[in-house]
Image 1 (tube, rainbow, N blue to C red):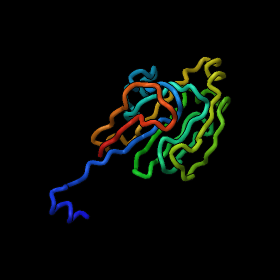
Image 2 (cartoon, rainbow, N blue to C red):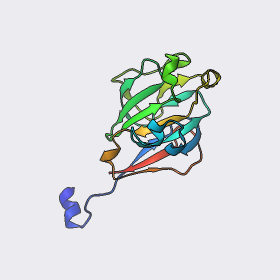
Image 3 (cartoon, rainbow, N blue to C red):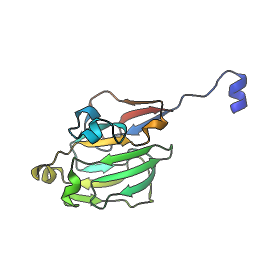
Length: 165
């Protein structure tokens, strides 16, 4: 195929990798996250969802690298090599797993839309925590461009990020 592309001037096809919403809610830029670790892109570029539902689904096809024992976050690697961190809420690690239910385990193969985690958002808010959910591309430097979809209300499974290599 490479030879065919070279002969006919195709060169490298620009492929777009899509990252999907892990939950229903409002899609916002990372700059609106009140924690500088996320808003300043220290962990990588991405977007955030202000969730309206208690279920959090895989934003990619791939593998579960890490599920934090507290249930507040999961690190995934997509079949395209994108390292994605899903972090439910800010400082929610301090809840020590209270109000979170884990549905996957490390090393598990997952498909976009598989249930990863559940969080009782009302209880988390009542405990004084922000439930905004950053979706971070941790290997940002491997992509030429990471573009967030237009700010909008999203359903789980809607495209939130487009990556170009």
